[in-house]
Amino acid sequence: MQKLLIANRGEIAVRIIRTAREMGITTVAVVSEADKSSFAADLADEVIIIGPAPAGLSYLNHEAVLKAALDSGSDAVHPGYGFLSENAEFARKVIAAGLTWVGPSPESIELMGDKSRARRAAIDAGVPTLPGTESALQEGDDIDAIAAEIGFPLVVKASAGGGGRGIRLVEDPSQLRGTVEIAQAEALGAFNSSDVYFEKFVTRARHVEVQVLGDGETYVHLGDRDCSMQRRQQKILEEAPAPGLPDAVRERMRESSVQLARQAHYIGVGTVEFLYDPISHEVAFIEMNTRIQVEHTITEAITGMDLVREQLRIAAGEKLGLTQDDIHFSGHALEFRINAEDPDNKFMPSPGLIKTLNLPGGAGVRSDFGFIAGKTVAPFYDSLLGKIIVWAPTRELAIARAKRALDESSIEGVRSTIGLLTSLVGLDDFAEVNHHTKYIESVLDALGDTE
Amino acid sequence: MSHQIISPLPGIFYRKPGPGKDPYVNEGDTVSAGQTIGLVEIMKQFSEVRAEFDGVLESFEIEDFGVVNPGDVIAVTS
Image (cartoon, rainbow over all chains, first blue to last red; front, side, top):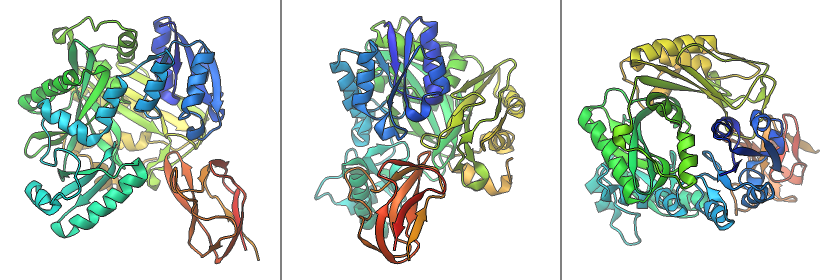
């Protein structure tokens, strides 16, 4: 691999460029008109403008990205996360053009992208799953009987959904038929497939996940993470390892995730996501994400590995060169997502010119940002500006370090989540791991203004 | 009497609820107050753009997938 095209923007484009440069790989950033003077564009060896601001006409435009790859003489394409990263059709086009796709095979992307097929694969690999239908509902199924067996409340999920999208709650049998009809219509509109399935609903759950890595022969896990602090079903504060899991639960989650990757002949990095019920201590499969995750940094902090380097090495055909015994876990890491949005006003996006950006320093602190002062946050894309990651030998010390690091941080020009995150990390409920995926909504008013 | 429908937000204007869908409304169509005529996307959040008065949608001033700034006229009704 000599020259890598990064089909993404923002902090993940910067993240990938950094590792590629360390490996002596030339980098090509593709940008929209709105991003032509972005921080990623500053750092890349070459910059190619592939279209206007709307992502549908630039970052999601298969032909424009492919043309840039071929015109620039790139030999590999890294899709980052979001955009085209889990698009099997695009992965096929990259491979057909004779380029290296930095990610799992199109078949793996398709398997895990179809949530009912993925659930079936998880069951076959011995991954714990919630009671539910083993595949998509079929015409003529007795849905009342199926639902009664699973029990209420349950959720109707779109097979082609994922990432918290395409989910509807059914609290009692009287809502079942109506909700299924709406869910099928919505799924057809949003995902072009009306396939839906049922799953038991866990009222108060934590979100935990396992990082897996494989080269087609050797498979390892890189530990787990907890991502239960969420707003609008999107993660905002993550930690590794997941705190307070019984050893047997953690072990089963890790081992079965590795087994799922192995049985799927998965190549590269992937994340198996679970719900964890802190009352029953049960874990259950949600989905597998077939890409690098935003929160990969905390896994890097506790393992000392560079996950983007592993992606690039494996994509280039190298072998993993290590086994599970070679992976050592050390300490505790927290990641804070700094978004350009206003926590005091329903997380309203806050684009604009970044006048100042003061990021924290000191031992055990890392900042991964897609922006520097003087850059403009465009209104067209995700609100993630960057991440502050802290590491310390214990969770308690990591929390203390995080408070210190967030206190050092400030942004002028756009509203941000820094204040909210400072409040959240200081809560007793966080220290005692009483939080869950609906926690922020339940305490937002009590926290008061965050600025 | 013509009225301008103005975007309060920066972002991208869409005339359709999704890819492959019909536009919310076409030029020349009758619209009623409160009717959705398009969407503005800002950082993955979608806000509906609505007609303020009953009337006829005379023209769109921003094309589908067009970039809007706060205060831009999206459409004109009469």
